[in-house]
Image 1 (tube, helix red, strand yellow):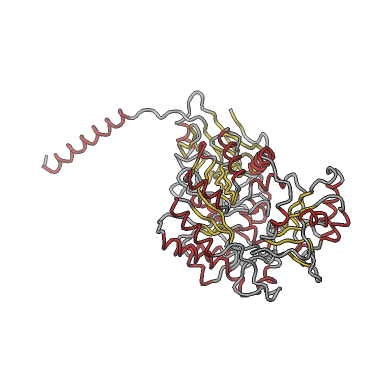
Image 2 (cartoon, helix red, strand yellow):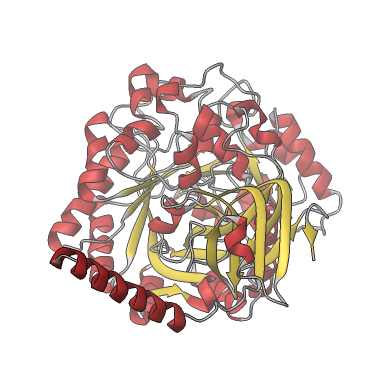
Length: 568
């Protein structure tokens, strides 16, 4: 035998012995608590994007792959769940949703979808019949853009129909409210009341208040509306979370909460009563910010149910109420450039302090002027306090000057967007902006091409909670009636893969949580959603017919639609 052959035999023998030793050292894997199987499981894990089984131990995934491999982890007490004909995706996230407002909106007068001011008034009158004498009546969701005449309403008809209760009605975007005469009197608003900085009192020709208050002017009325108690806040959050679970949500990024809400969230999460993972953003209040700076960043508390490590600021208002700050005036309101509700200097100062204390900042910016000013403020803050992994965000990023689109990637800023805003706004956006600015409006593809990610959300209760609407809007740029044919500015569509990432792993990254959630990867939380059809293959016009069969967080069901699974 030659020297080479001898070396080969010896090496082979050594490898066999090493392999045998390794085999003897290996112990049987501890059985899984739960094994879940389905026809198709989309993991959003690039190493294994499509599997048929996941195995769960405790609250974490320990395996994702073929059924055969999962069966090897079955033990005497392992629970088996099979969902034949169903599709499983990672637990869905809403990267921008107002959880407390959602809970309260479930009990307020629902004005969404009202097709006329008369319909709004009729819904308020119906509530007034059962309201205690003199009690405030609150409602949410009116949108004058649905009424044919897009002018703001005035308080006269509402005051005549409901004279005995103070009434305050939020516009659908939350950036304007309508008050009746009794509400105006309670707030002490007269012709002499001045507009605050960053706000506007819409007035009649004689200068008297019309009843509509835009952006910062809303506080003039809000300060006299009774504030909810901690117990009322608690019930609203629990109700909002349960409602979100029904739609497949396991995670919500909750922007701009005051300290009393953050404390209720902490109590609910600590006591196991919060059926969502909440990434809560601190409201832009100097005392509250100082309080949480002293505590330091709080990440994934209570088995991942609460994080408090970001601050929410506002740069401008909303497009629908003509409060979005624009570089050029509104096409349908010459002379109006929108409103800056915070100064660029303030945004820069808070961003610097946040970087120094290890916090993220997330700033609302809708108009192209607001987006530019926020990018400028972030750039200045990062020059002062360089941080590699800051993950600063701009919330909405709706209208961007084309010159500013590459700056998001250059600065590492995340555009946190809401695809259903596009399908709600497309009917009148060109009236507000003209044709030219639309090329930088809701520009998902243009942004993605620069290398950024887009965590998606709904801004609920501004838009409906349903994530299937989010997914459908992202891939089609059409409304729920599949209009317009081919989609509105279809060159800006997302692919299905991008859309699913925008509702799972990208929100997780935007919250510094991608190491533990956002994909069905071993080691991460066992958060998943069972759907009754495959949204990655169904025709776009069938997406909105998809139902959530079950929602699981940490391997436990938080919502089950019915007996759609076979369990033993």
